Amino acid sequence: QVQLVESGGGSVQAGGSLRLSCTASGSRYNIMAWFRQVPGKEREGVAAANMYGGKSYADSVKGRFTISPDNAKHTLSLQMNSLKPEDTAMYYCAADGGYSGGYSPLLPQTYKYWGQGTQVTVSS
Image 1 (cartoon, rainbow, N blue to C red):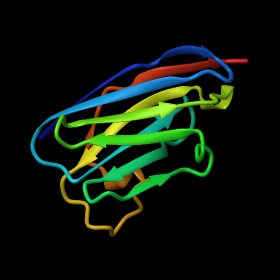
Image 2: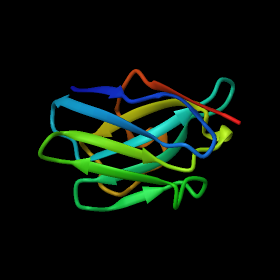
Image 3: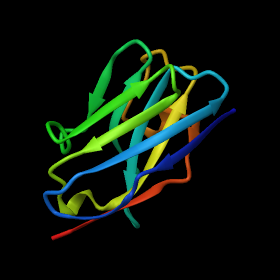
């Protein structure tokens, strides 16, 4: 089992920045990611980082968001800049220990472990 705890959500005006953090504990994992979801819509992959240095971003956040894993501290950060109202969502941290490249790192089915989520609200 991997336990994931997110922090750093909040409310910000459009154009502002927020930094999300996720702390992992428990079993080993080799990939972590951030997802987001709004009511009535599917969970969307935002950014992912595997333990071999690979990173992936959704097209909608490229150039604005940066994912940063810290393997020594077992944390995963998401720096979000130039935020837009459409970035408003519940953001979830996810992890898995069996990633081998078979599924896209931005698909929810790649991940077994999930955090409780942290809300991000961007006002116009």
